[in-house]
Length: 137
Length: 275
Picture (cartoon, rainbow over the protein chains, first blue to last red):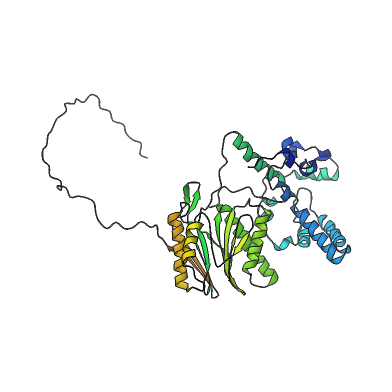
């Protein structure tokens, strides 16, 4: 395990907790640690977290150079529309439309084999989650 | 075969990545060593001969200094005429080749064409580079496609070589020395099989991480011949003679008997519960 010094630390936005008001929800995501917020705990953590967004950015910029600004704009609109197709809050969506747009439906990677949401041991309480999403809670 | 392996990367749950990494680093603070990945400590080799490609591998999997599997399969299927030998961390090699096989099948269905060996190599090196060597799999990909017979070796960090003969694993030096001595382009089938067998045998005898049997896989335009257990150089030989001596072989010169006077003090019987 290599030693990380403070010069390897990244801007807080990269690793900071994802809860409301920037404070980590201890009930849902466990205890916080300042070290984990400043320094990556694995050499590939940031690279993997940003992999899909970086791929998209690269593809969009290539598309812009070849076909002009309209092409990535139209595609991004389609992505936004596809991302909105979801199931109820406690059910994992298959993201079929989004996968088809990205071309992920033609390849198999670790995200398809590991951490399958249909095999997870924990499930949210359906009623509470729906009420939370509708703002009734 | 699939025991401890390096923490896998998955896109959606980065907090699991950090949790695994944090747990591993905090283990060492307490003086415990995290279990190390089971490597195959291997000798794998491949050559291109007149009609195609021959891949060879030994069959030992090690857990540090203990032999974990005496007869594992290191030559994995990728496509009907493309096979891949894997060295390094056993789980990484196994899962990587299975993912490759699935991707090749999907690609074949998509394009409607049989796969090329370069396609497999390209997907492999792109995936291994993405994970920056954290996936400890060194692979030899060989096969026959519409453009001919090809042989590539791919390293864990994502570099690759295209050569007429390649060796990988801890016994690579022993195997490549045999190749460097006797390899000739366009060899005949039997001589080529003998050469690969000799190279793997050199790895088995000269490297501690390799052992047991030699597996071969012959891939030609006509098809694939998977020769599991082609040669067993480490098999124990049959003992030809008997070392038991007949009673009376040694002459008795003198005999002295000293009786010990012992009295029975106590006698007790304990019945065993044999149900």
